[in-house]
Image (tube, rainbow, N blue to C red; front, side):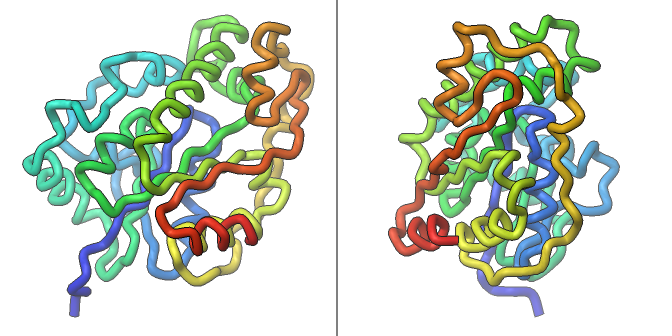
Length: 259
């Protein structure tokens, strides 16, 4: 019999090639959580499977969307309506398994839509995934005709906008790709405790993809202080970082920190 408790949404976002797909697979491995499956959409991303929020070929372009004011959707957006919520729910429902406590929806553009999605789904939570800006710039270079420094500038601007959104969000966690690949079991525990689900075994082996980008162009001296806020330094260097977790319940915040 279907559950009488409506499922909650866990939205995962971040710049392209930051590790959002990896985090999506980790979250989907938790009992009670599940993502979109069986669709023809790229990476099963929900943004392609709904008609409530217009999404054209110009929407969500890698290393463009996060600095496009028209794609920064907040609670003040005209689409903050019951009709939008109803259409999203109806469009996504066929792609999720029944009886889920958490529907996990991963689309990079969630990075710039968290404030709107929180108002549409007040019990939703968010995970933002970061990756070293030099690795992101190198990874998307085949898709985007721009010099590495311009791509890193976009990375910096995207994180600055995200930081401006954080005071408006109730439950959000920021994960770094480098911390995930360094200790994947801990990353999975943190996700489980963030959404109050039981732990699970890793669904896959995880390798450090940053190793493929050794020797790529480095950030400039002017860019380095901005990246250092997240523990990133020139030459793909990564420093310890305390993490970022917001949740209305102190017990959840403490559980994530202790994971």
